[in-house]
Image 1 (cartoon, rainbow, N blue to C red):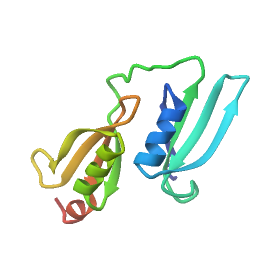
Image 2: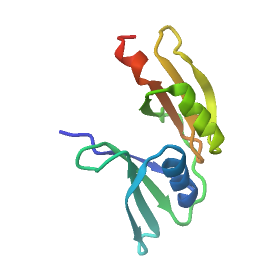
Image 3: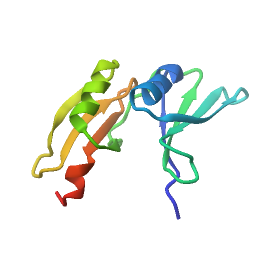
Image 4: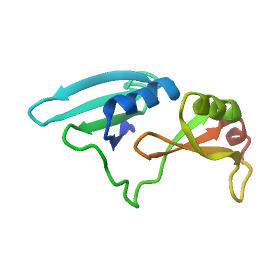
Length: 133
């Protein structure tokens, strides 16, 4: 088995694509409109779907806002320099909701940001993660 993608519903597809592509540096891998169903699927990620887990952004044309629910946690992204990454995200209009620093009860350096729909994304500094912390 292989993990293929995580799907999230978004209220404004263009705003979400701008966030994931311009702020987080992902690529738009594919996008398809389904006029009969009144929805669009857009897949974004850091590389081809056959070799990487990606995010499916689902935009239902008649819905502009979703309640996130209590079951959703976050998407996690590994980064090389978390401080520079957070600075760049802020500079490009992104929202850092937990500044970089060691995780509670540990030493792994993490931060949290949120996308335009309010979904949380955890950033994990890879060097601290690989040190066994």
